[in-house]
Length: 199
Image (cartoon, rainbow, N blue to C red):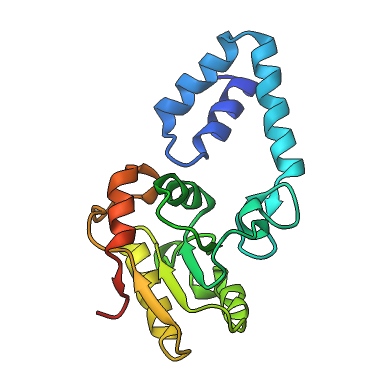
């Protein structure tokens, strides 16, 4: 335990995902030893992103405008929607250059232990988008882990009654992994070999 401001900084850094107590302590001391101008730029960047960045009113991706650049792009295929958990997954899929449709960001995955059910995700917004008769296929691209699989199964069962083709990314993605860390080739092959979500 450290005094006052140092301990408060360690505690706040420790609340970030993937940062344990030792990492939080290392980061705090890095901040203490770093050039003050560098840290002011960091603070300014954090404040700016919180003030300017919002979520696209169509797909839920991060954007500085009301709608993101992908939703505004007329060259994107409006008949196919790729459903992902987080905005970072949109970037992972875009890196493959295998997908030219649009996206829907759920804002997480079903996780009963963490108190996240379907109502906490952007599923209602997805259903509202499906009232557009242009949409022919939904690609479920949730993470290949327990929560992602539960979310994919829930979506597939719910969407099968609507009469739209529902597919799931194919093999090539390791179970327990995150899309964010998949390389372009693996993720590209997974898109090319996608299958029916209920098979």
